[in-house]
Length: 201
Image 1 (cartoon, rainbow, N blue to C red):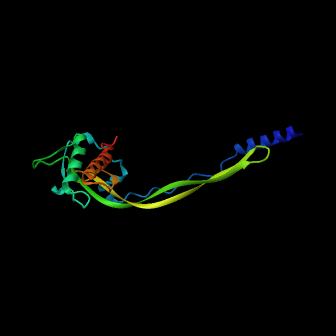
Image 2 (cartoon, one colour):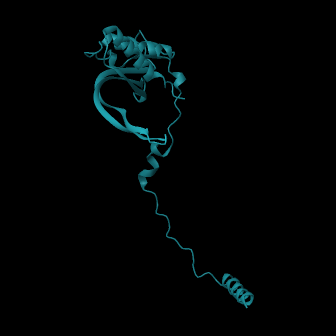
Image 3 (cartoon, rainbow, N blue to C red):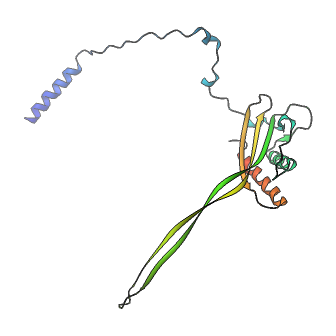
């Protein structure tokens, strides 16, 4: 009986597949493009060309000015740290009036950061009953302390000298504490850390 009902349903299904499709494809014509479309170039419709970072070989300070100094580091210290990091990446400073490949700017400023430290304080008890078996409990309670610190943020920006377009930018931070010589070392390390990703791969 079940087999017969299944056979009938199968025949009905196959018969339905052979009937005419009541749906007919129809669409409105595509409207004509506006007249100004032929003269307009939409750069956003195309991917940006791959930048050849190997073509950049020399640099100069943007607007011909050294980085602005701050209370934490003077202008010459910042310029020396940035120049050294660029030199390690094969970028040489331009000392004449020719147009360089890159224009460089850098700034150093202080910012506040919130730091959190978690301390686990434990408590417990224990002992022995008259049969000698031990028992006890131990637990820890996390204590989270939040405090504010001052950090120094170093930012380096590179621009294409011919187009003026930004090419690359990065920043790094370091502690604001220490003597003058320690600050100089910290500044150089922060600039090196910012420049580690140049050139992008």
